Amino acid sequence: QVYEVQKAARLKRIAEDPIPATYVYSGQKLQYTELAKAAQREELSKVKNCTFVRSTNDNFLSLVVPMVDEGKLERDQKLASKQKWMTSRGFVYPAPREPGTWNRHPKNVSASRAEELREEWVEGELFPDPEGREDHPDKWTGGKNFDSIPAFAREFGGYQYPKYEREYNSHELGNWNRLPRGRMVDGHVPPD
Image (cartoon, rainbow, N blue to C red; front, side):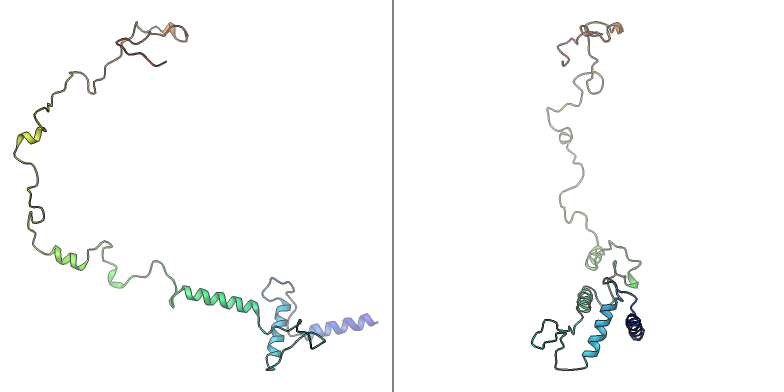
């Protein structure tokens, strides 16, 4: 009977509570305890110049009711810090271009260089020495000791086929004691 009375009182208190007890866990935005604390802060902030404690003895300030929402302060600080990163119109990359710059070449010359290019060209003004070939045949050949005729009349690069001791014999393949055509002659010794 006492249980039924207590249960009825508890259900009545829950029904009259303006804060819905839907989310009771701590990591959620609409958590019941945090919403109740916010409602308590709002009610207590109407009374000025006093401190509210949950202690039965007024000499102890260990159970002071916090009048500040620390989570909201932290969120506001993060938002204020993030607003310092951006301009009033936000951060857009690449920045929008002016309407007159759409048909301008990205590597266009500056105004001073364009003015310099409009001047009349004078050949050899910056480089007075004559450019191109000179009319001295001894400078074309590279000196007296230069000769353009090849020293050996053989294939390009001077490649010569190597000479061996004997003709190729396929029966000697795989023989550890005798090579199929012997060693190279003309002073060339194959590496071991």
